[in-house]
Image 1 (cartoon, rainbow, N blue to C red):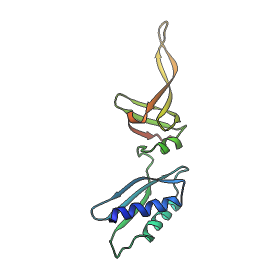
Image 2 (image 1 turned 90 degrees about the vertical axis):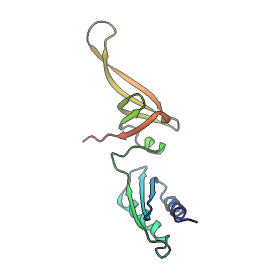
Image 3 (image 1 turned 180 degrees about the vertical axis):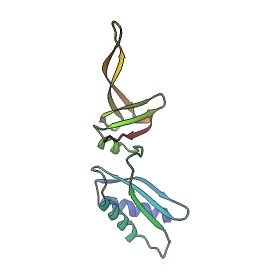
Image 4 (image 1 turned 180 degrees about the horizontal axis):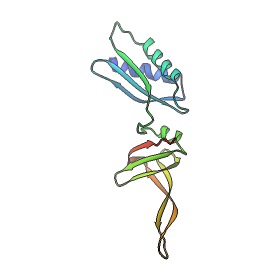
Length: 154
């Protein structure tokens, strides 16, 4: 078993003990620096990072392979990568980039195939001059999404 395979196996076992926490990113550099990015259904607290770090570290032997380990939650501005992330962000505003457009809207639904965004837009009136506010909704399959980021409002 290679070092990378061993790290993946140990990490999977560690995450089984924390079912609300899930893996977003695992990088192992040529110099054996392990970088683990996690997210959680209810967010990630420092203790989650500590627990995952300890579980990985206690099951790897530095005598076999010297390594460095970094466990962190994915940042607020990080793109969403998993369906599970979309589902936990229902009700929040996203900036979604597709091949044809950029949409900033509220995520109102997320299932295993697509998301549904809802927003208000100003459009020309059908009769007469001026504009009116209309409610728009769009269904976007995950395959069409190039990048989606949760916007943070204060």
